[in-house]
Length: 403
Image (tube, rainbow, N blue to C red; front, side):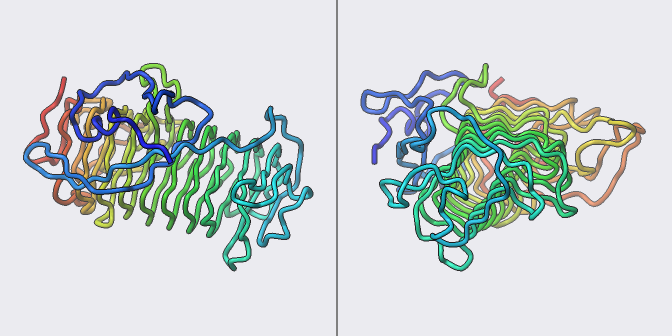
C-alpha cells in the first residue's frame, strides 16, 4: 500500500488554495495516471474548520490497484446472459478468459457484447448464498440493447461480493429502456468502477445500495434517472485528481433527468474533481438524516432545470432543483472549491445551493408554478465556504462566495 505525498492531504485539510486545475499528483516519484485504479481506505478522522464549524471528515490512503490483466484491446464478441452463483460457474462458457481465482491471479471476465437481457440482467455475479469465494475482475463489456423486461434490466449486477473487484470499460447505451440500470452494486464491498461509459439508461447509470468501500473513477454516466445513486452505503470515493476545464480524467455525470449524484442515508462519502452539469433535477442531492461525513472538493455542479420535451417536462417536479442541495436532516457536510451555477436567480429560475426546498416548481411547458409542502432542510454543520456561487436558499448564516 502506498500513501499519498502531502499534496493531496493538504488539499483535504484546507492548507492549499482550491483550484479547478491541478497538475498530476506525484506518488513517491510517480504520477497518478490513467491505467491505475484508486481505492481510498479510511485511516483516521480529522476536523476541518470553516465558518466557525468543525466538520468531521476522513482522510484516506491511496492504494494503487493494477488494472485487470485483461485483453490488450477491447474487442467484444456476442454472448448470452451470464449468471455466476458459485465458484464452479467461472468458466470459459461464462466469459472467463484468464485467471485461476486466486487473489494474485483473479478470474477475468472480459470481451463481452451483451444484448440479451431478458432474464433481467446481462452479467450477474450473485453471492447471496455465499458460494462465490474466488477473486475476479470484469473488463470490456459492451451493450446497446433497446428493449428490456417490463420491470427493467441491469447490464452488470454485483450482489454480496466482498473480495476486491474491479469492473472496467463497461460501454453501454440502453436506448432509454424503461427501468434499466447500467451497473448495480448491492450489499458488496471493495468494488472499483473504472472508465465506465453509461449512456441513456432508463433508470440510473450506476446504483449502489447497502455497500461499502466503493470507488468510481474516470467514468461518464448519463441516465433518465440519476447518474450515480447511492443509498444505505458508506465509505465511497467518487473521482480522482483531473483537469476540470477539459474534463480529461474526470468523472462526468451529465445530462441526467434526475441528479448527477444522489446520496441517501449514506456516510463517509468523498467526492473529488467530479462534474455534474446539465442535470434536469440538479447536480447533487444529499438527503436523509443518515447522510453525514460527506465531503465534496474541487468540482462543478449546475442546475439547468427541466425542459419541455414533446409537451412533457423532463426531470422531477420537486422544490429542490439546484447545483447542490441538502435535505431531510443530512448533516456534517463539507463542500469546498466548487463552481456552482443555476439557470436563473433563484426566483426566475433555480438556486445555486439549497438547504431544504422552497415549496415551488415551475412547469417549463406551461410556464405555471406549482406549490406544495417544502422539503425539510439539512441538519447541523453544513460548511459551504470557499465555493463560487451566486444564489442560495435556506442557509443561515449565508456561506461566503469565493467569486
